[in-house]
Image (cartoon, rainbow, N blue to C red; front, side, top):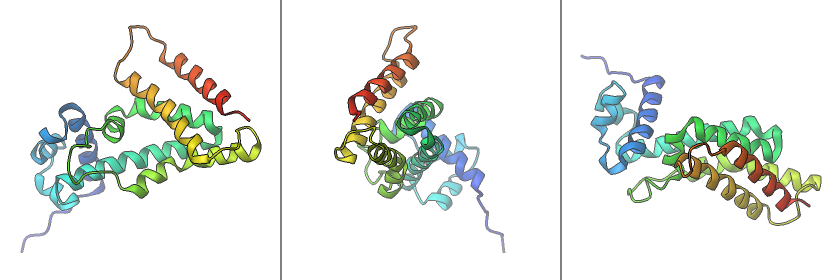
Length: 191
């Protein structure tokens, strides 16, 4: 009797990374499991055995992105709201394919594929906690925490998305623009 092939965590991670890159380049509808397997230097059997199918692979790639993003936010939470904002941009610039996969709408038209709500929510928890802590410290005004958090998220997300989409002229100082925006957001929600 033949031994079953075991696909390890390294193969799984490689498949997730390759999936994000291929979908970013070609869109989810044009990427096949054979494409993913070939780019990851493995077989479609590995994809099926680890994920089950294309929709599950795409969901796993998005969830993996949210976990990685959430980890970066947790590492930055001691820096308060500004630290989280800086970490947001840094993570997106380091992982542009994942960022676009998670937030760019590429999967919106692809059926049976969306992030797992608990995973996506967990990634945004550091922002909610930082807003609550700033409110308790009296540095951020007393308003609904979710409203403030989503407003802040919208600001940083918009700027990062524009930067990644190359919506600029050569020499645009995105770092300076981003810092000025973080300052403005801080002033706007100050108590």
